[in-house]
Image 1 (cartoon, rainbow, N blue to C red):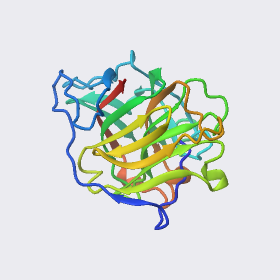
Image 2 (cartoon, rainbow, N blue to C red):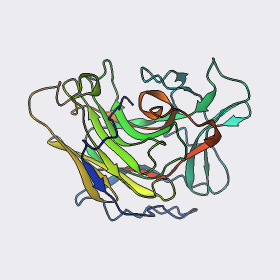
Image 3 (spheres, helix red, strand yellow):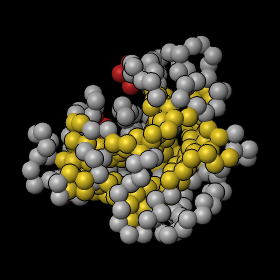
Image 4 (cartoon, rainbow, N blue to C red):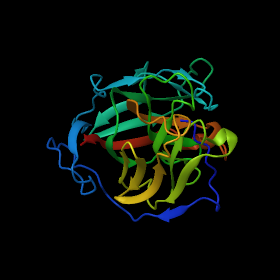
Length: 280
């Protein structure tokens, strides 16, 4: 997650209404949201069905471990679901919880712990949707995003941020893409800042439709972002390769720490009601 799209009046702003798009706890049947485009079929999903407290399904997800945020100057250290007495990822009452917390003993010099979960499966094109509720607190930085299966060079290989949230701006959601030609390092990044009321108190539906022609972002079924394939090569369109999904909650960093970090907010909980992937 390399997004540093500034939260300013110069960025396209859309207003999204309140939603409560969350599958009821204990439901095992997948009922498509009303936002799935025609012609798409469910090919992969995690409904986080467990009612009793359980760990995430490691046949579907793997943990990426480490600190520093891979260039983002983040403050957390990513660990597996449980490290000692600290749990940073668990499923309960039909919800995946990714928890950023302060352990009693820092890990490798890091005072915050969290989880970064990558889907084991990759896809080229499709419709990707999740029901999400944001954590509360200045310094939190949750995301739902995508990276290439075979990433060697960023931003040349591309990145798609379906949803990023900065705790210091409670009602703001960022939707962005990163490419060699369009990225924040050179001041050309393509993205939008969407005003989304109640994002920290209610579940909203965040989605991406990705085809060979364009990428479109949606919040609660309302399109808020478009990125077209200009047909000029990989520097603009690296999006004809398999990508996987990521769920994580960072702390601080180039975007999450714009206004510092409030330690009083921890443990901070990022909640995921479901993740679903559809293809034509």
